[in-house]
Image 1: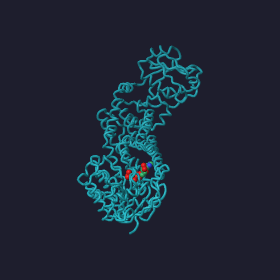
Image 2: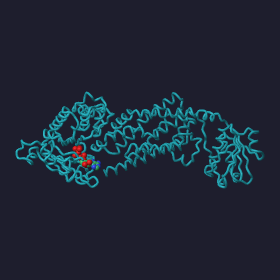
Image 3: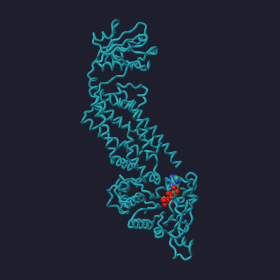
Image 4: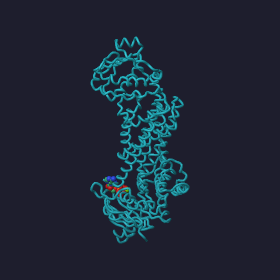
Length: 366
Length: 250
Ligand SMILES: Nc1ncnc2c1ncn2[C@@H]1O[C@H](COP(=O)(O)OP(=O)(O)OP(=O)(O)O)[C@@H](O)[C@H]1O
Ligand SMILES: [Mg+2]
């Protein structure tokens, strides 16, 4: 009966002070720090309404064909693009109260923006990167009046997909949500509390004598760690909701997304454990993996303004969970829910199969 | 009497060196079988192979008439193993330890509760059932280690040095319990290097050295190997004569 195994594993985890510290205080503290640090930044973003920017198009340049699409896409992000055929960009910006100016030429494009409306410039640049992402890998960040180099000929293949929608969300909601996701992905730390004790006391001998199957032992680990981590994170969520006013869009759906993410990432972490057979090595290896996933998935900066390439984001399961939860919170719906659940579930299935397989090979050898 | 356990040419090699070498033991149902040997003789390795914790390099174990490795599912529940080094969770209470390890045999619910009470009562830990194992003294931990292995009522109990490092009272208590289990029908294999203990409780004794079986029989039979008048010799002298006086685990 793995019920008793799960029960006692959970007891062992909840009796470890480290677990309590990490899972109840960890997300609360990290989120609180980030919330206050980025409060003003996110607030000012919230205040940004529609704004105007201008462009000039050199005759015969590659951008001519796609300018209508670019304009349409910008419109969706709240930017109205007006065309000015003549005049000095800096002067035009000042005279016409523009947030920025894009000069499309045969050699590439140049962005002019005002220092005062940094955020608008940010959104403008963001929308442009989104539009050109696959066409050119060239960074084009420019301060006022610095002309851009190197956009070059590649820009002929202009990417005309819709720029990503940037939802308006405040920092409390954003960080209050994504830190929970980050800590949920690293549940093996919680499991380490009893795994290391099991190792130290060589408890596996009793399992071997009793001939309980490896699959049952594995399932007990998976379910008990998920259970203990869920309890810890729930407390964390309650604290964050009570003290920082974090809003979760759809509590039930959000819980399911996080639960599935725990299963998926934990299955990966337990597979690393079954390979290395060392708690310390497992924690170090999986910490690196999860940190990278979090780094690209927006756990340390807002994924909305993230400058990481789309490919890296797409590789991070955390990105999908972050995005679906944040969008649920600020928009009430998200196109990423199914993808997030699907990826977590596949991870769980694939890594569980691998772990069971490794266990079989091991026990035949031992 | 029928044979309950038999090892056939049981051998374990670690990087080429045989630590258990071609061991043939036959344990009869209902006996208390003592396994003696100096440190490093291969006693624990033998027990671990019998209990499926260590895979033999060669040979097999026959348990209740069947190849144990091939019939583990069916036969494991007839075996109880008390390992030499404690296998208990310090951060679990006494009763929780017994619950966890007894449940591995599919026992649950009210029956499991009954077995927990019974096992703790058996080793005299009922009063301390709600205390964490890490707060226990060495002797209490040893007793808990036993309680964790008997809840499923095994037919064969294997004790690997259960009395190491504990006071005479606790030792006496454990020995009495082993005899009691035996009276209640369990066959016992008992390893130790305390001669008096083995002589006091075992019906037959095997002496191992360097992974090999060097003698096997009742205490009298073993003494007769050394001298004619068995009243003039202790088992310890027999042991030293047979295994030599050199230190083993250098
Ligand atoms: N995993 C292992 N790898 C290599 N050598 C081992 C291993 N386990 C045991 N040995 C060696 O096998 C020999 C027998 O060890 P074992 O523990 O079986 O002896 P023992 O008779 O139980 O000794 P003790 O009375 O000290 O408990 C020792 O020399 C030991 O060093
Ligand atoms: Mg030993």
